[in-house]
Image 1 (tube, rainbow, N blue to C red):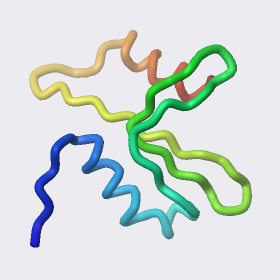
Image 2 (image 1 turned 90 degrees about the horizontal axis):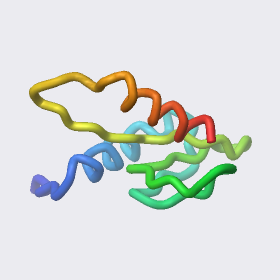
Image 3 (image 1 turned 135 degrees about the vertical axis):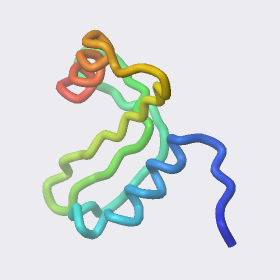
Length: 82
């Protein structure tokens, strides 16, 4: 039976779950708010790396008729660095 996806964030979370062993992730979590040093960020999915506690941040964007602009890319970078 195939799944009916509600959002592309759910698809990204499912794909991350499928490859978590190859990435060395001990857990994968869906969309959530995470506390940074400067502010709270909403991320689309998160994986936690086994042993180190490092995280993989998944941020989904869907622009079927255009590309991400410089400000949007910078915002993703800021989320990751914070």
